[in-house]
Length: 240
Length: 317
Image (cartoon, rainbow over all chains, first blue to last red; front, side, top):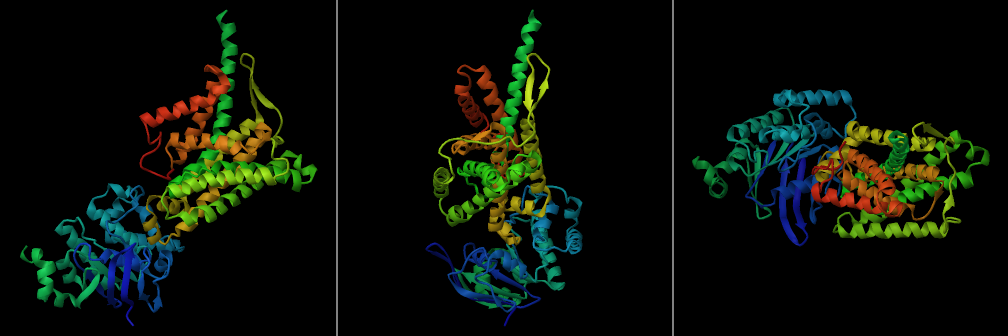
């Protein structure tokens, strides 16, 4: 059984089904991407995995335990952290307070201080401005803080929703390099991206979600080479 | 000739300032509960005034039916015991209210909990009237603090009762403590996080239900303390005290900027001062002092709808 195993997930907002049968696996130590167009159901899938939404049907197993009925705070304690779409920082709180909230479930002050330092090492700009309000930062810096905040719970699985949204190509590269570093240090990453080219180049494994269903899967390289993927998701990017 | 007339006028003015500050700090203490609950779940808990009322009766019941007379009449025993008892009773009512009346409506349209709040308010008043012995009329409430007053020798003398000073000091200390709690502690941070973005708070591992219960508990305890202090200062309590002072406190919270701790205190003090000074100096006297409070409210809502301290911000220090 895979580290994270999602089977036939169906999620609805009222009468509207946003996810109609998503199935995928995430192996430990890998970067796995879910790619697909806007509205395909990627974000809804992540929100269901982290317990913000309840699935209509289907199963989610994480580290051998079914979690589809657990409240979000228990799922976090089990080692899944979710950095949401649009970053959603606590804008009126400082960098440090945002990071402290990321470590909310932990009591080991020494470990928290150590992990905070690790985030500052990873993103020095955050360390330099640790008392500044998060709302005053640029998009790229906010994304760094959002990832840092998610790391503060010491997750086994880090879920990132559209980390490249609104970022310059250079900043996107910087964020993706960090994601690779995190993977190399042993964190498993589940990435949701519209920037399919960059995501596939980074991923050990990827799934295409279309109209609420997983339709294709393969290694990042396989999908990059797949003509169906090229036509549907890479069209604009390949030329540039 | 001028000087002779000026000093009594000055002493009247200063006396009303003192009265206003006492009433205002009482209202501030109640307003904290309104503003905290609104900050977390954007509900105006119209039954909050009744929590204050029930707290006063809880304190009185403890003094009347539980404590031996010797203790109930010794202020340094009676005061802390009655305050804690009032706070506990009020806290229990507030927590039960959240659990059974508001939580089931958490995802309902906003009008539903608002109307429920009005229902809870009426239900608590009537329950008190029916079940508390003698509550159909106003009940005497002992002064739980040292008798007597400070007299400032200006004109006819400005008299400030010790119990009034106690009320002001306790309110300010509790409000200050609450602000520190919200600003400095882990739970306070969880409250601010839940207020700013409940979903993301959940992603941080915060259980919003627990934060919401905590908010009701703290707001309830403060209202209970206010209830006992009110009884102690005015020396009688009645079933309607919650409604009347609840409206003032709600107005104070809006004036200060609802969701804002400091705003609730400033708004409370301001309403106390307006009521006392308008009752003294405006035409109609104390019979019309209410009018001026709401005139101020309307003026603030017209020119600064978010209140003095309000941004789009909710619970903050």
